[in-house]
Length: 162
Ligand code: ADP
Picture 1 (spheres, rainbow, N blue to C red):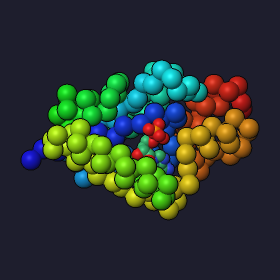
Picture 2: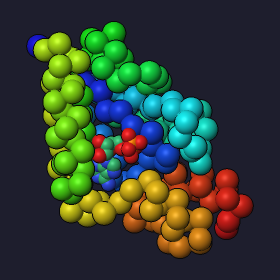
Picture 3: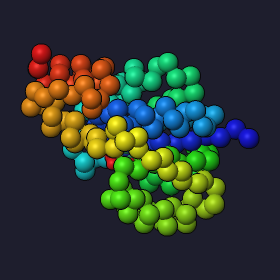
């Protein structure tokens, strides 16, 4: 069986935690699509195109990883594109609690056609969030342990930092 997995999020911006989940999921599933969400109500630091470009650059050497736009209800996107698996990263019990209730909803909405697979964050990255990375880097802190090098360079140039 050929397994097609989706890893969705806003990736504003992609962090080392996201990258670790992408690497690990790409080893398990035949195809991994990173679904970058468009949420008009959520104000992002990076435009949709910038978020996609950063992910494409960082994952360019991963042959079974592609990037796509994820709009509207996640379950509709999953069914429309024939995904077998939806990958989620779990950092802590707060993530677990959120995911636990979402899972009940998705079990219903996926109509038995897709399954959610949870990957526990590596201890080196479990404290990282995109929000934390934005705060640290915009205040001039060392962000090299939070985001991939390419993302760090892009953020610094957007913020006019050295
Ligand atoms: P959203 O905007 O939907 O919260 P994110 O881009 O923050 O999306 O996260 C997308 C997915 O990545 C979620 O499953 C989230 O739990 C997971 N994730 C976020 N940060 C990390 C991390 N540091 N380690 C592992 N997984 C993470």
